[in-house]
Image (cartoon, rainbow, N blue to C red; front, side, top):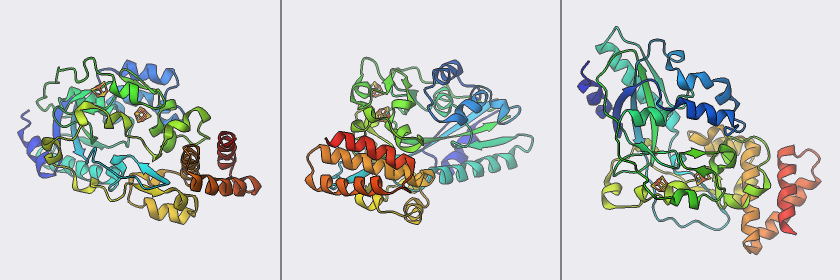
Length: 347
Ligand code: SF4
Ligand code: SF4
């Protein structure tokens, strides 16, 4: 089945790239082993729905192709980080891709459905635990690097992925064969929490997971490595040679909805937020599911990092914050436990 129309529609809908591959991932056993080892941490839904990752039939009965798309967002730009400030990962600096990419992917499916009424389509953007990177790699969009992210040749890894499963036998693209990494180990060396072994990231050590998905207290050994990352972490992408700014990369079209509006937040502001403030601050953003206590937990750790680096203003504010939490019997356990660990770093 000719795929020209698929490409034309993807282009009209503004996706940065499209590729068609098999619906079954190439390395499901690696994912199963990763879960067996507990590397998914507290993301219990991954364990509950682990079969879905290897069997797309559970998502769309009869699925035989994965039409993979990506939306690029701006990557490394020189940025001046204000004092006592928490950065957020670049994919979350614009509008929520879960909404904007998914909406267009659904439209993609509807338009194909009207041309091919016998087919079925299902749009997935982090909505079901598919192995999107694996599928995108098989669909020829790029290759997975040692940091486990998809690297597009000449464009890098600053992109979010979406998958449109279908029961129709569209002509497939060829996967790329070139290894993007070779002898490079920059991401492994730069990761502040040693989360990366080649082609595998232990979520339990990854700042992105710890700041966004981990609901409990963040273990003390990872606090310092969080640096100024309030929500997410881009370090392994920042250092990757495929992501260094070049004229060609800066001219590569980006998804309008993912253009950044915010680099992060003032830590004091975050520590003073009410639940309503958090909702307002994260409204329309991919961070909207980050819990109130979790973001305050992160801010407290980052402020401690600043204090430990010799920022006397941070130290003074931190002392006040710790005393307030310690004397408040109503303070949530998460904050009390975090405050205790932060206190231990101040002696
Ligand atoms: S996102 Fe940060 S913590 Fe996670 S693997 Fe990359 S560099 Fe390490
Ligand atoms: S930093 Fe080097 S090893 Fe890591 S993904 Fe990029 S090219 Fe591969």
